[in-house]
Length: 146
Image (tube, rainbow, N blue to C red; front, side, top):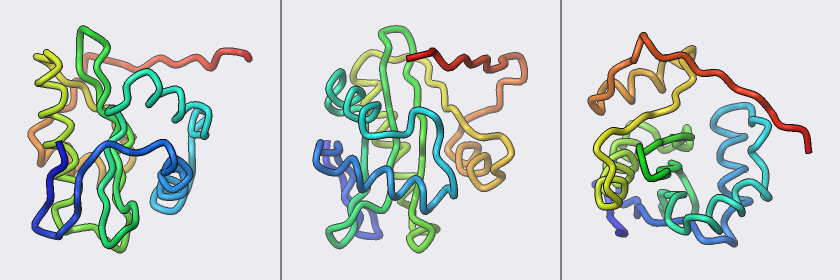
């Protein structure tokens, strides 16, 4: 599955020893992290599905990420992130294409992308990748007590 972009970024599955780097990328590029953005949650993700966390590597460092997960019914993509210093180089587009290829191979016929709707840059990235906002679907969340 490794693929290289015109920017020279290599797209591949994340290794367990890179999870701290992925979390740091999320913090730096997004300015915040969510309730499940921690080592334990990312570790559980890749323990369950080793190739679900895709990363973009450039010059030996993680500069992008995408979770492309398959639940047996639908492909879901989350946390599309590119380091601000590496944006506008096609890295996000390559991550999305790699996620789509992965999910198609697993049997997905329909994909969902979870996007923070107030992040105009993220919305534009997904729209430019051919995704449409589903006005009829709302997201409901609940954080379970530990």
